[in-house]
Amino acid sequence: MVDCSTVGPAARCTRILADYGATVVKVAPVPGRGVEPVVPPAHAYAAQRYWRRLHLDLRHPDGRDALLALVRVSDVVVESFRPGALDRLRLGYDVLSAANPGVVLCSTSGYGQDGPRAGAAGHDIDYLAVGGYLWASEPRGDGGPPLPGATVADAAAGGMHAALAVMAALLGRAQGGRGTHLDVSVADGVLWLTSLAVDEHLATGTPAGHGSGITSGRYACYACYQAADGAWLAVGAIEPRFFAALCRVLGCEQWSAHQLDDEVQVAMRADFARAFATRSRAEWLERFDTEDACVAPVQSTAEVVADPQFAARGAFVEATVAGAPERTFRQVAPVLAGMVRPRGPVVVPAPATSDAAEVLAEAGLDVTRVAELCRDGVVA
Image (cartoon, rainbow, N blue to C red; front, side, top):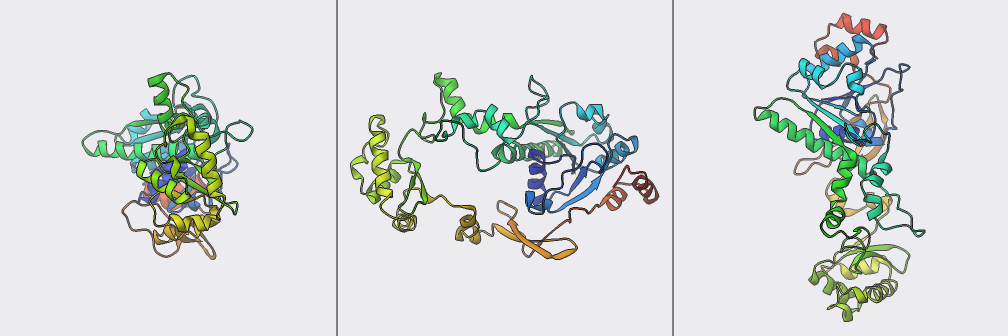
């Protein structure tokens, strides 16, 4: 798999696929030739673990030829240029497909390859805004849209969306098809993430969003409450039996038969808040430990990495930098559904390393030719 992206959704896509075993060759611009490559710190994107790297000047004919050599021996090419940029480089899907009819080209962009916003720049917050996610979320105290604590658009609407599309395309190819060109729009992915609210609006004409449904703040049974020590608990007691348990433990059984009565939600929410404020979060978690009420702690990142559930699942792994074993740190392990997580330290590449000579030789380029390209600054 050839990854011509920088950061964002496309990088998340190849991160996922690499964790599942794909061989990823990261192609970045040659330093000093146009756009400078982004070199994230070691912890970013799980330190680009398992990737191999090289730099190519794709504006130079020899750089394009080197990329096509990689394409001929690859199943997938992932890119995140502006729509039309690959064609201007004479590396569009028709060219890549001519080199390798089975290749899957995954083009990830903010708004897709066509439409009035196709050429617009953007980042995570922009796609969340356009796709309705920010509007449908609980507003800040001043009434403005929230700033999410995770890059939801890049990771889920873009990265996971792209990875799923790539795997589906490879499955289709294995069943007798050819390669294909995937047009992955991050904003389209956000629209899908927001589809509960959007579908409600399409069906009813109401301005669905925060406060309109059971999962968007309309009811007291689905909210966050502060404990006596200032910590918070999340309550998701949707099913009646969970709600009955919640009311029983809180001493608010007068509300058990009124879960979805709109006229009493303000009073119910106030009673729940007063009840939660009488004990610490730890005390409430102990009381709810034997009750199915869908109550969970709102954890800080420090609490997340110490959480016994994640520890039992092997959710974190030790990592070390290649050539510098003393540079060790922890990171989120590959999230592999139903598969064995890595044991022992994961070795990640040092930021300045390049696998150009080895990768291009494996793609069929003569060693002498690779040396010439490096000497001429086309490859690094």
